[in-house]
Each structure stands twice: as structure tokens, then as C-alpha cells.
Image 1 (cartoon, rainbow, N blue to C red):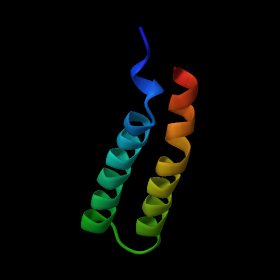
Image 2: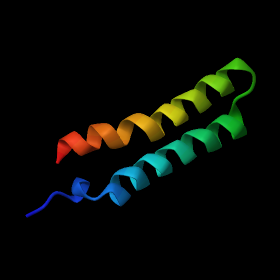
Image 3: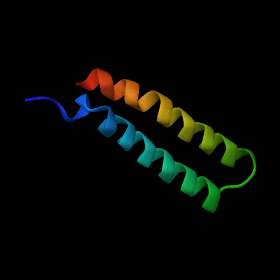
Image 4: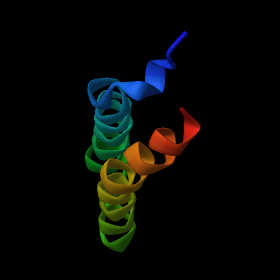
Length: 57
């Protein structure tokens, strides 16, 4: 049975949802430098998480 992580749509979908939540929190509750740090984490989430999930299959 193939892994759910075999599909790139699932890997990137999970990543984009997580990044959207982080960005929403950053824009809603944070300000200044910490907002930019949180947005940087969201950007890394989109780049790194699909690669990690690709190895999970």
C-alpha cells in the first residue's frame, strides 16, 4: 500500500496549511522583528517540510 506522502500535492498541501497558520498568527498577534522571524519560519516550512515528508514515504 503506497504511503500518503507519495503524492506531492499532499506534501505541499500540508506545508502550505502550516505556513498559512504561522503567517496568520504572525500578522494577527506579533509585531516588529518577531513578526519577520515568524514569517521566515513560515517560508522555511514551505521549502523544508515537503522534502522531509518525501523521505517519510
